[in-house]
Length: 380
Image 1 (cartoon, one colour):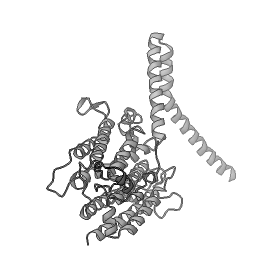
Image 2 (cartoon, one colour; image 1 turned 180 degrees about the vertical axis):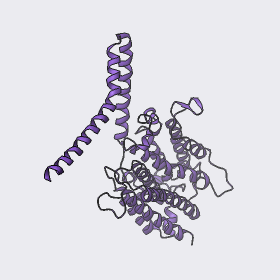
Image 3 (cartoon, one colour; image 1 turned 60 degrees about the vertical axis):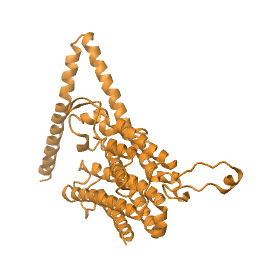
Image 4 (cartoon, helix red, strand yellow; image 1 turned 180 degrees about the horizontal axis):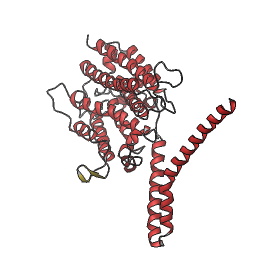
């Protein structure tokens, strides 16, 4: 009886071994065939082949390096701005220093407070396209893994998803700057620099130097985003010279907070759908895309809302929103501390594979609930 059991397991082991052998042979056969073809060619054929292989080796080395090294990534980077030290809301005239005014007879030029929101938005874009390569429009990212979209693999796509999440926050903010924050009510003219920046940021996230639809050369995505940085910084330069407008009213802050809450609500629904219907644990190859997109969105909005507290400091003080902003900040920080090495989309009641999407969705809804409460206070 024992011999039969032993023989049964041996047969299973042999079958598995033969299966792996066939699989390995199938994978290696094209390379062996190419090696045989290469050996029979002259150096006039070999040298171009070597050059092409070397070119792809360099390109893939650069691609892997750019996807794995996250330059400037720091969830607490907003601390460097020291927004808490600002005493004047955005767009308001900065009073001259009393001691300096007493020692000079010439009238000093007026200076107004820069917008912290605009500064942070420009720096987020700069981090995406200048401090790092914009992954989504790189040639090898567009080509995929043997024709398969990188987003459908568990490899080399986390940084691209994170960047697109940050870009989602930046795009929403640029729209609000044009429509409400950078103008006085709805009857004043739209600031041309903010309008141009919004237009550039709406450009396709996947464009390389050449495309098939439409066919022909194109301007790559990072070039448009770099121009948007210039337009945003030009607006802030004009604002600091009191030649532009930042309308820091309570109803504008209410609308801005409402738009952000709705944006986060949409992403939380995406996380919930993936978590409920595709909970394959560590084997869900799209879970990492959803997670890092949501993470990037929170990363961007954390910085932007921290800046909004400084820009709307007068409204925050008048409506006693300090505690709510403080609570929202803590929820952002708690969410951004979740940085698992491997994203798992397990069942919510599972005990082996964690559910990182459910965890991220929970913190995203906590942030959104604070924003909804803030919106309610502003609407009273």
